[in-house]
Image (cartoon, rainbow, N blue to C red):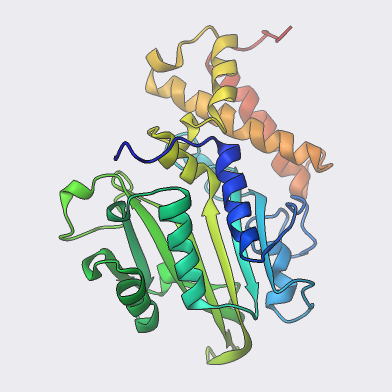
Length: 326
C-alpha cells in the first residue's frame, strides 16, 4: 500500500464525504432511524431505504440531490461477524443520491474525484466493475476517467444489477474496489479474492422498471443511488488488516479486552473472534436502544435481544462473567 494515502479517522472520512457532495449542491440530510417507515423490513438495512418511496415514484423529493451517512443493521450473515474481515451487524453507509437529476457520467466522475483526490487513493490501486451489458459505463471509465480496460471487469446480474424486488425500479451498477496488491498485475483479476480486493463504493444507475413478466422499460426519471461503506474506507485509509481494528470499533474491543485482562494482539484467534463479536454487537445494541428499540421476543425487539445475548455469551467465553466496569 502506498505511503501517500492519508490516515483519516472515521469522523474525518464521514465529514469529507458529506462536504464533498455538499459542494456539488447535495442536501446533507441526517441519518434516518433504524426503525424504518417501510413496513416490509424490520430495520433500516441500506442507505437508500429512506428514499425508497421517491425511487418508486410514490413521493416527491424536496431536493434533486441528497447525501447522507445512514446507520444500518443487517443480521442475515451474523455467523460471519468476527470471523471475516468485513462482516458486521451495524454499519454506516455513506451515500449520494440523484432524484431525476444527474446520472451515470456525473456519478462516475464524482466517485473517481472523491476516491482519488479527497481520499487520495492511488489510481493504480483501484479496479472497477460494470454490468456485463453496460458498454456505456465501461466506455466512461476507460475514455473519460482513464482506467485501463484490463482493470474494468464486466460482471453478471447477480453482482452488478440492482433491484429492490422482483418488480419495480432497477438498473445496472458499477462498483469500485481497492486493490491491496497491485504489484500482482492485471492478469486474471478475481474480484472475489477478498485477501486482495475490497469493494468500497457502489454506484447504482436506476433507469428501468421491471414488470411482473420481467420486461424492462425505461423510467421517466432516472435516479442515482450510491453507497460507500464507512468501515471499509476506514480500513483502507487507516492501513489495518480488517474493519474491526479501525477507530470505529477497536476502542470497544480494547475495553472488552481490558475487562477480561487480555492482550488483544497476543490473544488466540478464537479469543479475537469473541472480542470482535462484542465490538460489533455493542455498536448495534447501543444504536438500536438509542432509536427506542426495546428487547422482546418478537420482531426487531427479538433482534436486539439476540444481539445482547450474543455479547453476554462471548463475554463469558473470554472470562468477563461477573466482572463490571466501575
